[in-house]
Image (cartoon, rainbow, N blue to C red; front, side):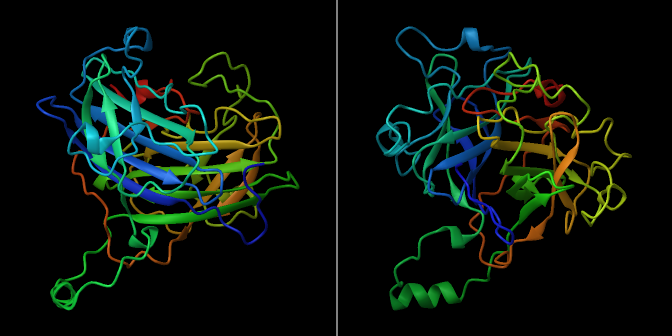
Length: 362
């Protein structure tokens, strides 16, 4: 098991965002959020979007015999987006030996928009300042953004500034965080034995009702693969809410009634955006990672519940969203103003965009 959970312990991920800006005259831009888990295995989750890409791309159309980077999205090892030298190559450290980024790719809709997400083991959770790159169909680098922490506590302590800089810094008004990060620990329901945790980013990319989350649960059924898996070939989780992970409207995990249903504004949303969110698979020990972004029509998430479902849709783990206490620190978040279409993008494990893209790409 990659995580060891105990009662009173919360999975806390460092949260980073980047505004993806065009390289040269590519015209490609977007946003990405990266969650770096607090374990020692270097598992990170990313979720984002880009537009200005070639239209109607599928995986068979991406890359060439001499360039496998086509339609790729990767964290790179460099220190800035200035040029290829400062961007570096794909970012991963020992003990990871083979490139974990090779299969991380996107598809696009008829408007040239790509929504992407993935879960990758890179051997480290230190991604601050790293460039996040988007490649076009032929593997060329077309957009880049440097990952900045949502809260500066995710940065290593800086050296003391010289007196002049310190004096100047004190004269600057504090910049308030534009987002709120929540942490949640989920505990078993009805003696299920399923426990987990997640970090949740609200007002993601400055979209007031967009919530992005990354987490893990263990104690689930082993070797499950969802029918909604982006990899394909899944036969499990066919039931309503099967393998689902959702924010619920209630405020207490004590009963189904107090948990409520899926949390979204039914007056603003044409359909339930949580229908296709969840984990795509479990391993031989019953562990599952999940990552997603959902437009809910809601803007306040204080004390709401995160609930994990089994493959037959049963509610098996529940926890209350607790606002991260360091929210009042100076924010280094990279702000973005682009709005997103209502819907959800489903999780994937080191692969491509999800089957639920159709909800977002309309």
